Image 1 (cartoon, rainbow, N blue to C red):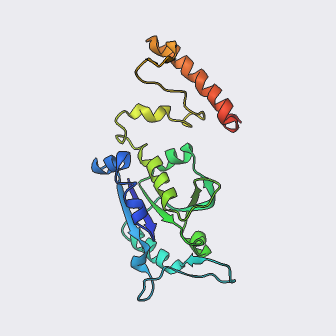
Image 2: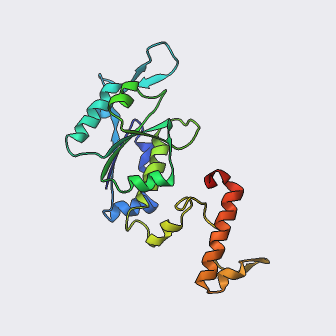
Image 3: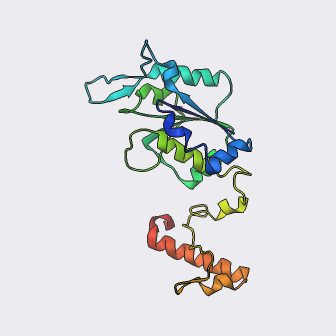
Length: 224
C-alpha cells in the first residue's frame, strides 16, 4: 500500500508516522508513506500556497493551483483509489472506514490549513472527505496521522499478533471489554476469577457480556 500525504507543515507528520506500528510497517515493506510539502508547487518567489478569500472573510485560504499541480504530478505516476481531504464537515472516521481504506492500494490524503482550501479543490479533485470529530484543530496534519495509523495497523503483518485487531473496539460494533495483566492480585485489586479459569468458552462469554455492558454504559448510541 502507498499513502501520499500533502501538507504545508510536513514536520508535523514525520515523527508520528516514523515510529511504533506505522514505522515498523514501513520497515517491513507493508506500506510506503510519502509526505509532500505543497510549497514545492507554491507560486512566486516565496512559494505561496495561500491567499486572501473572496468575500472579505478573515483568514487565509489554500489556493487551488499548488494542490492541483501536486495531485496531477502524483497521478501521472500511478492510479489512486481515493483522494481524501481531512475536513471538519466530512464523514466521521470510524473503524468501518479504516477497514475499507486498508484494502486500497494507493491513497492521497490532503491536509487543510489556515482557513481551509479553495472549494474548487473539493469539487474537482477530492473523492472523499473525512473528519476525526466535531471540532476544529489548527490543520489537517494530526487528523491525517490518525487516519493513516488506523489504516496501517490493519494491514496484514503490521501487528505482531494479527488476531489482536479483531478484538479492537468497534470492530464488532461494541467497545472492548476490560483487560488485565499480571499480577493477579495487586493491593487487593484482583483480576476477575473467570480470566484465571483457563476455560476459553467461559472467558469468551464473559468478554461478550462485558463488552455489551460497557457499550450500553459508555456508548449507548452504538447499540442503535
